[in-house]
Length: 426
Image (cartoon, rainbow, N blue to C red; front, side):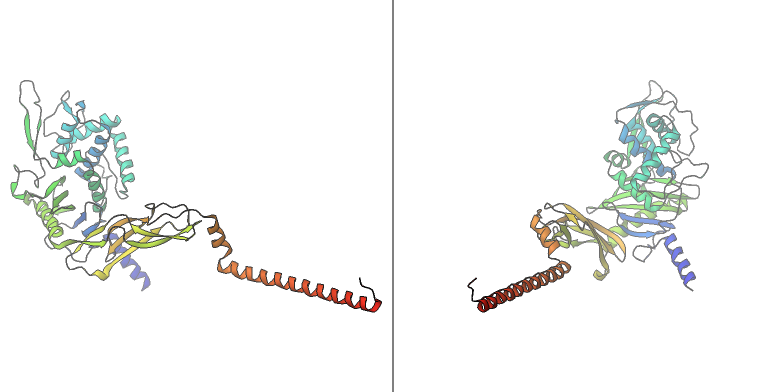
């Protein structure tokens, strides 16, 4: 019976759970996740640990690495003879010898999903697609994307080597959100590329993110959308996006949404965003400098220091949330030696709603705790155990002194008696 129960629990953990127990009925995709962009706290999820192919989402990691190395005005000359491996691989009709800035390559890659530009950026960055892919996977580990393997800069994966999860894609999206260039590009409606032949005019292209574009499938334009991209498959589509509404920024991941021709993925994404914006609200969990705990300090007179949060803590919870389901987990630096300065980070507090992470904050020292040599005596000599030992020593000393005193008295009495017998004065 116990083995069967363990197997069931393992299966549930493997599949992942909905953060607040209620699946979003208006989302048709089998796998989705909605998270707070600021701290990654999950609002809603379904099968978020299911492994999927990153596909075009690989281009976001390519963009992050490219932004780290290049200036946007750097010019790259097309010399890529690799096959263009998806429907939008070379939609801009670029050819060998064609020159684009890094910014234009990023636009071509992130808005038209160009494999060609992804490969060009990779070769310019690392010398080859293979070496660049190694850098992508190294960066994924640095980000904490523990379930992700990239197979190429573009997402091309004929050998099915790549994998990721909705949770890892949220991490990737949050890193992209920290990059103003990437967010600016992926929130762009139209962009221009130079002509492919002399005498031509600049060419206008529209984003293939239909939440952003007003020119392709404008029925799905979503005013709150701020960027990122879709991943189009044969029988389904996926989407990784960010939206901002009423000063709340959310990240949505929708994977393998069916009925690609009907653009169901965009309906799913919009419905998922609206679920977060309409059915969750922000609450205050801890005010700024609210005392949460205390830490033990060695070498200070008090022996401890009070800890407070370094900033006001807020979190998104369901509108009908139960306050009793909010818990916290505290980690602190107990046993640190003085001195400790006011504001020193001494730990961290994480908050959970119904066992799901919703917020965190650093714990800092409320005041200075200086080193005091007398504190060592106080905290070592006068502990309860040492007090007993000192008492025993004191009793022994007093006993020795008493015996010594009684011995001296006896000797004096004997001397006095001898003097009386002999009649001597001394």
